[in-house]
Image (cartoon, rainbow, N blue to C red; front, side):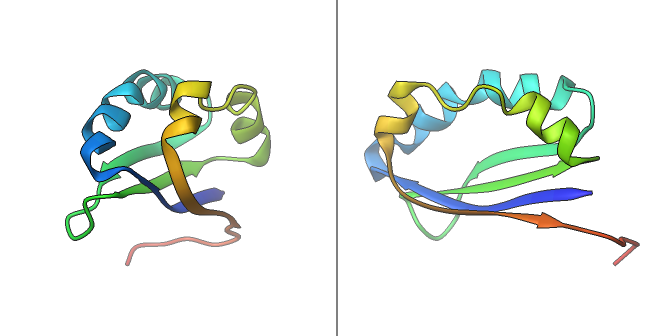
Length: 94
């Protein structure tokens, strides 16, 4: 299993527009083969921050979906980001 997790920042006044612009990507990801979860969400404590969480069955499923990244308009809105990939070998109930 692959987990992608982290955050990115945008102008606080543009965060809602950024997230709305990502709606189609979220919908496509959730329908993609091998996607277990895909979330982009507004942070409750930081008006500029967008939290990123994705869970994929495999590297292959992730790469098949990732063939296209954010469009230029979305990329231009991102001020900073820290998003990491984690390879999970075991998972169970918390």
